[in-house]
Length: 227
Image (cartoon, rainbow, N blue to C red; front, side, top):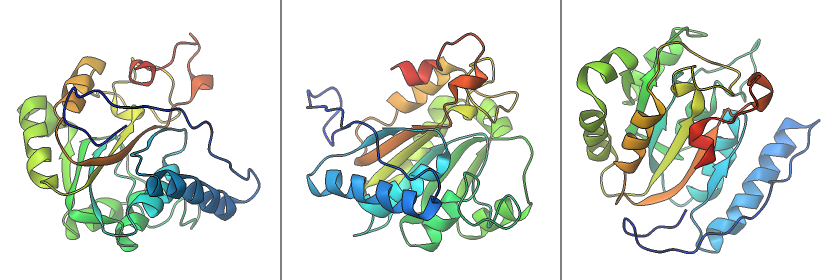
């Protein structure tokens, strides 16, 4: 991803896999942060493809240290729990709470689109709304439509630097390949329409996460991951 005007030609490079430590979560977070910090210092706007949504936190630590960024978050889940899995603070259900707490994301410039399904704790919704995060539940999304919702997203993030995080479980589970499917999401065509509607924003990075090929018996990756 490069910070350029819509449809302008840009240079794109594959920098390979981020190093991780499979037996030490905090060391993995530090390694991911260092990897993306080098890209950020070189002037690149990273686009990451990952599994666990927790990867967004160290990426934001790397690219949003100088100032908080706005955030457009596509997901079925808010991922703003304080803890998960028996008190763990760093999981795929907590990255955006930590990011706001650390001053990496401006919650008043953050919008979540497609939220639905079960919650781990009611506090994740209450806390998100209390700090100013705009939550668009899936019922509202279908009532208003993708063009209107994205117009609001553009207004919320404004002209400042912004990040896009796309969790594939925001899509309807007819799109395979994720470990946390939730019935009744938007289609891949609608997702494309929304993402293309963000053209022209000051995007400093983005990610596609929660892709889990073992959960797809057909062996076909989600459409959004093939682009």
